[in-house]
Length: 501
Image 1 (cartoon, helix red, strand yellow):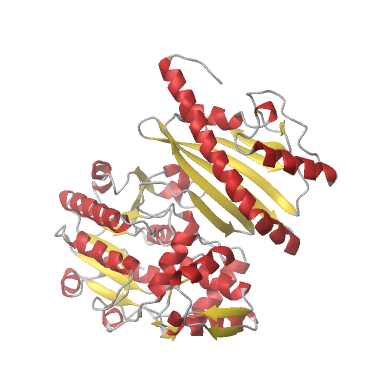
Image 2 (tube, rainbow, N blue to C red):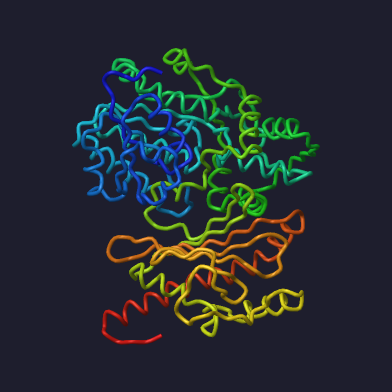
């Protein structure tokens, strides 16, 4: 693709997310100078394209952090949207979009490109689809030309919508279907979405002024039942689908919570959106971008599966912290590259050094801070099974180094004031790790991240994980809470000149 002559400098938001993470390398390969706006630059580590981009730290909920990011840019991509279910998520989305549009206006950007969601305005849209439309309206208040793409479900390896369908179809021989399973939708390949986003840079100002909202979709209009049946056929699965009209959205969300890696709030948001018919009503996309040939669902599905089973997934929905949310998602459960993981995050009013020292001090005589008897019982069971048990303790009460024993764990990695990763040495049907991270935040605060990883070995590995999931939920919730509380107490004592354990 030839680089647009007028627009050479491009700002991308959502670069740690599903679409943004795939858009950036394509823009670079097309010859654009790319700057990315991220809240936490550390989360870009490992991206092959990182050395080729300019990184700017900022948050769309904090208008004072956007000015530097906008300077010298011609075009900005707004690929941000929250998927929470709390009562004020829509207001946060509006504030974030308004902050961004104001900053773009002050920086005199030439164009904003936004990826929103399909849905007829006159219908009873879900709260999330309606919020996506409102974001587009907020961006247009800048007075800068805004091109808003509206798409339905994105089909691609790692897409949240696709993963929801995949896990449900793979995991349920008998699928109980709610009424909305017959709702018409027009799924689109992630490759086509990226094609449209890049082609938007070459759209003339006249066309943009005439068609500020462009609906995009794939070649097929289907129902969600059609999509699941085609998935089952391609995978060689026999699935019985039974329509159950009384199934509520909350009931389905509860099922999805246990069958898929998606956390319940995200599953609920996606399911609510499936109640709305989302199909392309016009042919503007075809007329303005004739070079883009929409893929049919079968092709999109097959290509997504090839990437999944060949371990070539570029980005996943779980890469994102959840877009514009300035507050922290407490718990995320997901899978990636064969690993199950459960992540807990907590903002702690203490500096990273103190938070690091707190989780490095776990175990041994100090114990595990919350429900210590559960950890002790797990050690007893392991000992009875011929494992290492819980009696090994630790070498030093406050210090750890790589290779140290810590009860039934071994220190696999440790980075001062930042990270501790423990590998389980108890008998489990698979491999397990427990990791703690301390990420510095403004105002001498720390984002504490606790992640439990598990690589199951066959059916019994999965059975083990899910059988212990309720216990893990209680124990790990309490653990991350207590680490945060102890760190805050230590910070207070240090500030007041007192001392204490």
